[in-house]
Image (cartoon, rainbow, N blue to C red; front, side):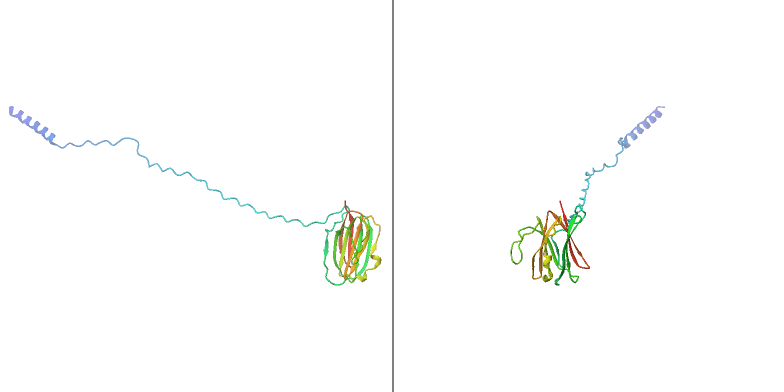
Length: 218
């Protein structure tokens, strides 16, 4: 009986001894709790820079050409020719067939008619006194207050009749048509008018004529 108890006691002691000598099993450390780590925060992007707008091309405006002087309309609807009027028609000698004047409603007319369908060089311009005969240099007296000069070149001066050289028709506008030069192919005339006027100049054919219409202006 006593032996059995000691045997049992020895077994218990031996058991505790074995337990004490066994290596201790490490207690697993619980994983840290908390929110799972998210993906790394992206690096802040640099502030966006608005693209610089390309300059809008500026349209180049071509300069507007200055208009050529237009003929001025008169109260009766006849267009005035811009003076000086300069027309070159060659170097052939031209004979004069007639020089005449006429009065018409609203205007007075001068006509130079030429021979053989030829036309001389023509220059018509405004002028003012004093005037002289050429080549004598004697002073010229002519009726009127405003004046035109008509210069014809390559004229057969011997064809100009004396009866054409000084005409005083006494028209409302045209007061006198006077030749002041006629030699070496040049024939120059003065037109004396009663007041401001313009000239409508035209060339007509069959027969060839220089026509000058004198129109009063305000």
